[in-house]
Image 1 (cartoon, rainbow, N blue to C red):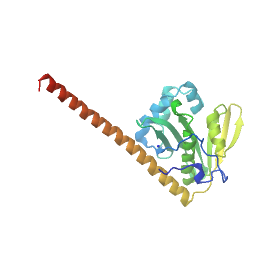
Image 2: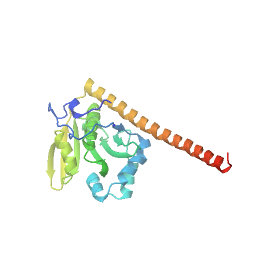
Image 3: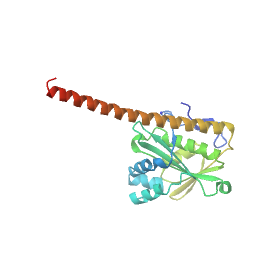
Image 4: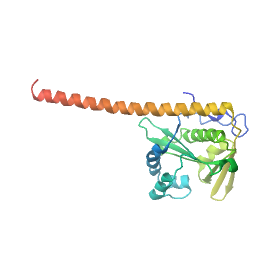
Length: 232
């Protein structure tokens, strides 16, 4: 769930040996999403309970506030990444947000959410690595994470990537300095994009053919039942 990109492919924080994902983590294809995934993003975020919404957004976001957030996503400026299961349900998603003028500001912000059943598999860390790769290739020199200090999972991801964390009461800010883009980093992003797209396509085709086969079987069952009733 191919060739995958991890922090070991480029030194994020100037370290030769950035911390890897947990040992039990399995590398998964990450798909860069487009506006056609807006409904899936909304569906995913609405499944978060009140506490998870509080950690993700910094406040107990209501359904209406989440709908407004998803409606306002700018896919032209920002980057949205997702991990999908075999049923093409979005089980983890990340938002890489850019300022209006990246060339002047030079930074990007990262946010992530993972469905409860999919936690503990390193998905958040892999999404962070994927977003960092995109950010440095887009010219950002710093990746920021704004999180509540109680959001241990998010701060753990940032710390293990080599980010500097500053706490200010109930809130924390992590910033990770990114290296300059290189041929290797651009190739890594190209490969990651291709793997994510192929994975999504295969899953979509599998679902489509599964439905077709199910319909064919229903027709066969109907014909067989009709023949039995007629005694043929």
